[in-house]
Image 1: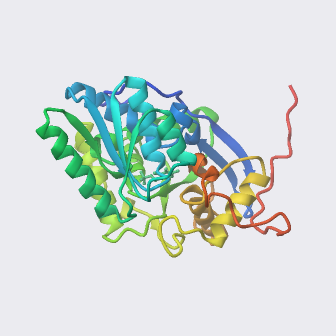
Image 2 (image 1 turned 180 degrees about the vertical axis):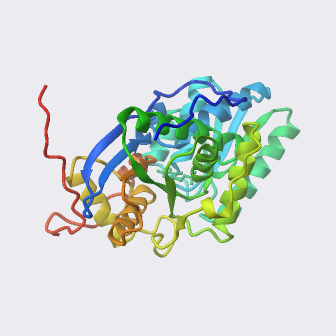
Length: 349
Ligand SMILES: *Cc1c(COP(=O)(O)O)cnc(C)c1O
């Protein structure tokens, strides 16, 4: 099916910092026999890549057009979003502050190591409770404002409607790649935490059409994640100036793969991480994408993914692999059942 991606939409302010389009890779067959494609948004290039880099482009454009002189955001101890915000701040030459979970460390690892390398100032709050992080950011914003600064505060995950609008264009990018390849995809699977990436993709789908989207929740949101995501998708469509709305039946969220909680490892995620790594050198992370991919495998097993190919939207997260709890607990001795058949038709050119 060919999609009308020429549809022009207003308000697309961004500061280009990414290498786009990201690759769409053939990753062989799933256990059911369905073909798997991986949308490599882990390769967005800014500050070692990931989904938040797309949001950073539009958020930075917004910050600059508002005359802001400082970026501040919040995230968990190993926040990929905080790390990419730090990289974006470095790229546009804007002072960047990160309010993060956990205690101060003299030997930061993974994302914190990179965020410091990019020159951001870390503000560890000694707690992992999300409301505590938001409160501390607000306290800092008030203090800076009182001192005559103009801070640009970015919410958790960069998931303001402006930030999410980046995924409207990301969806169009995928649809164009699928049209070029002539691939018939039934389902796109994406890992969801704040719901911002999912909301942006849903907004894109409302405009440009395309396959169903299955979001795998990895954060166990306390409220109504589906309704929050739907509202965010509508707010995102407002930002891009469109009258379309996303309806509840567009929302498909699988909440069964979080395990005990956000960033708490699960055996299924560890197996998915090792399985995909061994089937072709793809790297997932324990907090997000391994749980997302475990959700994809479970739905493949349950036969809910439809007759066509499946796209896994790889949102990144690799720097966390090099943090304290980043390595999977599945050893080399374990025989894996999540085995994805590698593509055997190797092409030598
Ligand atoms: C932030 C993040 C997600 C979730 O994105 P949201 O827009 O917050 O739902 C998924 N994967 C990785 C690696 C992330 O860093």
